[in-house]
Length: 340
Image (cartoon, rainbow, N blue to C red):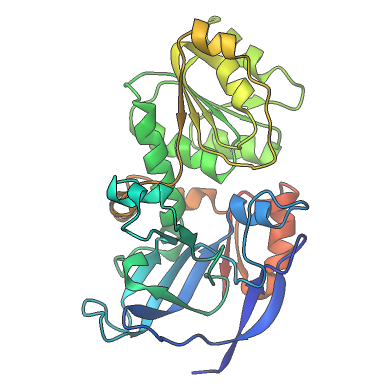
């Protein structure tokens, strides 16, 4: 095995920096060395590199928290994984013994940390992860599908909060990978009309391909367009998949509707008219990372319940990571997977 590897590193706002890093080694009994098959670029990665950053991260960390790998070596405490086994990584690590963890809310752990954000992740050929972060997948599952497991696990948690009834109408605000994956899952749950709102033509075209009704927000008036198409009623479920559209989600929701806040941006301060929430008896539902949803997401992928690879715009070598980030920022791609 080689001693060094190319890695895409967070060195500050701007582009990910490509560096040669030592190949990591298994040092703890529960650690597993992985050879990365593919890693998806997430919207969170883009936020980390904004100036000022829209999401915190450790400087010098190898980025990439949506990744698939094969086991190369396992520590002595790992009895159920063998070299060659394929896994997807659940990057969010909880301590297991704080008040939130003991209450069944590991996503709110007081000592929460994340591979690819605070600890080295998958934008490299090799990565070391603890056994508890790994979920075995089928040898037959294409990496182009498997790479969506982390994002899908989060979306599954979010869609569960919608309490969707068959035939109910939905508005997805933001037709990026998150919004379109919400649409795919909600369609499978029996949603009626799904309106996908975005400014980027490429995203609206993708929304049409998966059965959504596109709403072009470039001219403004997205809420008015949806209300007109629903006879003034609005939608039963409004999803902010961006993290800055809370006000529009409230405005488009029908009386008694549910507003699901999935997207995150620490710098966003949307103006919200609280009177409308109270008067129309809206339910406001924050959702942050799925709780124990990885097994469900994997089953959905392996059984073909959803096929998110339709959202994959390109697969690019890790050496082209800066270009891949630029394509995503300019709206010329929806989702890109990096191959080391």
